[in-house]
Length: 446
Image (cartoon, rainbow, N blue to C red; front, side, top):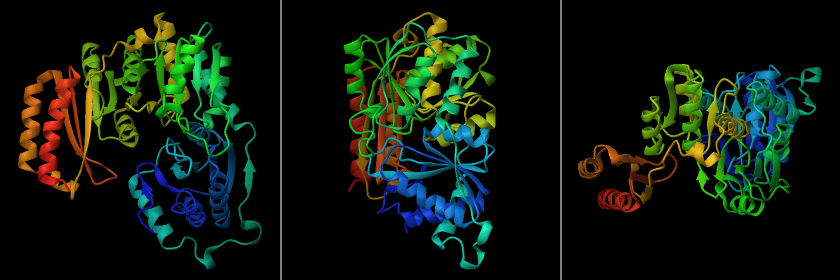
């Protein structure tokens, strides 16, 4: 078995890479390392039933109790892990990936992702074969599955309380919603309607093989068309497990995670609720975000790429807002992970308080053109300390000055070096990105 955990739980093609046998051992490991009571939820993938059954059987074979939530968004699992006082939360999902993929990701008792050291311990336990025969309970010591009634309702009620407590109603908002044939099919439209919005939804049916296919936050074209067809004020698009969200305005222009975070940060500061006067983002945030925060007098703490790193920095510094350009936004006072529905409602609340359109609110940040070139290399670690590449980066950075930015880094998952350049216009960004990529190709390329 190769490395089991990636950047967000165990992932792979269901039943070939991520098999029932692996899920069974992961269930035993969850009881061993997290505790005996586990909350479990899943997205709409066909393989979800198989992996949930195998994981649950493993957990029960170790004496664990499974609180089964059914199809439900990832952030709801994080929330209900805390609400139901479970020892851990489990999500069967591959997020924005294609339908044939699936994953198993873990939350601790607080609804937070596990530290890497604990993931390594779980991986080692699974590799060694899981629970030994003489360790297995018998008789009335084996575990059970207990279905949780109306789990999605508990989550929706939580979101509605947050917005209602702000004195906000969405009356008059005309919203187009793309549920990506995923878990948000059971939650987002209901929450938005109960808050007063007029919601037209697409891709809220599912058959297990259509999740994320040409829809949702990774394919905004159907949402743009719906916004135009119904004259919506805003379009909202989730990924399959609804831990992220992207938007389009009334004219079909994308509003990404950086723009949403900028608008929400400015709003929180105006209300005296931005702890430490700081927001957290990653090194991949758009330069326009940095400029917008500087103009608003807000400090930015940048982390490595990945919402795990954003969350760690937020917890360490006591900060309330963090996120990524991809649409993972964390409001730490309200949930312990990225929450697509909560983010959508918070952004709409900013618009309502400002009395402005989503496009106007998002214009607090002007996105800089960005060029990304991936260079396939023999050894991505050889990037560090390469004098020729360092010189190319230095020359581009000097030429761009404060009106641009260069980021060159190895991919976390592939034999690639990623060259990203932002500049005030596309042509300059592309010119400098290509110049650096050419040097990377010459020095390290295959």
